[in-house]
Amino acid sequence: MPLDQVDIEKQDKNMTFLEHVEELRWHILRSLLAIFIGSVVAFIYGKWLFNNVIFGPIDTNFPLYRWLCELGNMIYSDDRLCVEEFKFTTQNLTLSGQLMYHIVTALVFGFIASFPYLLWELWRFIKPALKPRERRYTTGFVLVTSMLFTIGILFGYYILTPLSINFLANYEVSEQISNQFTLKSYVSFVTTLTLASGLIFELPLLIYLLARLGVVSGTFLKKYRKHAIIIILILASVITPPDIMSQVLLSIPIYFLYEIGIIIAHRIERRHDREFDKSNS
Image 1 (cartoon, rainbow, N blue to C red):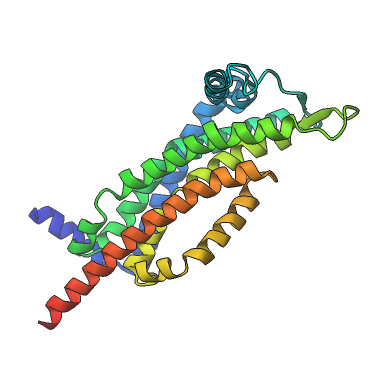
Image 2: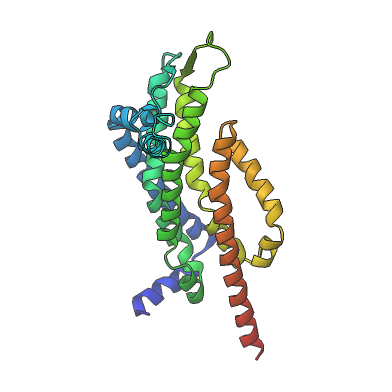
């Protein structure tokens, strides 16, 4: 390790509590600045974001709808799976509504865009406290976490959100009822479902951290797999709208991530056992 790097690490370890607080403050300020910059850019291009991203799932040419239509033509040789229209309108009911949700949407996009940088700032703060072996184990933390978050965002936006909107917007109990959704309802639905999906896809990382701390193990996770399935279904029902299809669509990848977490926890458990055997030999 270079001499200057060793000096920096010694300096970090000898920092007082107030110096650590000051260091954390700067990490937080830089993170907030990154979110602010991303939000400003998103605000400037707000009209494009609303027309092409926020309202993208109600466009009949949305990628998922085209795929379903092509699949229906391939299987049934007709258009039964094609989405032809959405029977609702979006309306703003408050004077400041459009400005308010323009800002809210910009903040959400700013957070999503700056997420890898936020992770990097977090990593920079905790890195000096880690031992060399722990740093080796956490190599690629920012990359892996960002990839999981991005996959979750894409799944939530391109799969979960459009299917949920298509089901709820076209559901009717009577032809006498017309659907007129508020801007708040629609924007909150799209952003919450997409962002929640991105965060949930961090499950393998959470299991990894808990396993490293000795809180859970692969044996424990495997033993309580049935209980985990129930929790996953409950979690999916809370996040998604009240339709079975959306709940199942979200439950499947969460359960898959849970199984990946079991594999990761088993590997860490075996590694701990080998280290324990070496220390006692």
